[in-house]
Image (cartoon, rainbow, N blue to C red; front, side, top):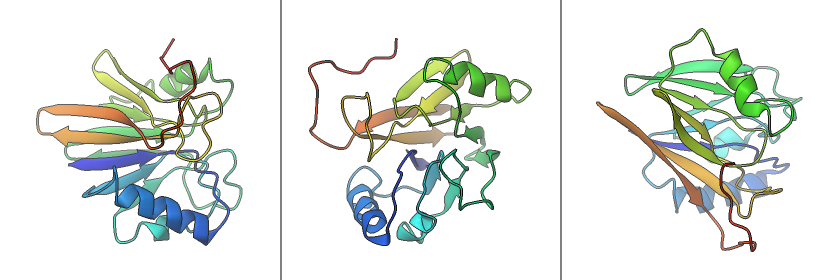
Length: 174
């Protein structure tokens, strides 16, 4: 199963949502089975721009108009448990916060957003994944999304750079 993962899109119009969807669906999200959005979608109809691909999202701190979205969720996709939450607080504490939130769940993957900084690392038997942002890189050197691949015996993911903008300092988890 191939899953497209994004977060922190912060879009405000159908035009911007359609352009992003086209860029991703004709690029890194070609042939994805599902799309997961880890919050701060802002534009309430972004999901429709990716139709008919199944879409699951969570509410971020900027999603004031999306009260129907859950704050967190646990999905079973491809036989793996995937936790999703946007996150909160400072970027340096976010991993601790989201891990504590799901402390009582056995997850194969924990997806979060909020910091706009990509993270893709194994933590014990769980994959910790923040796709960064495809539209607002903040302190990250480039815009990013993630691809999550689930096979019967393995879960892998990669951060995908979607533009050519690079600063002199490459992003590394530190």
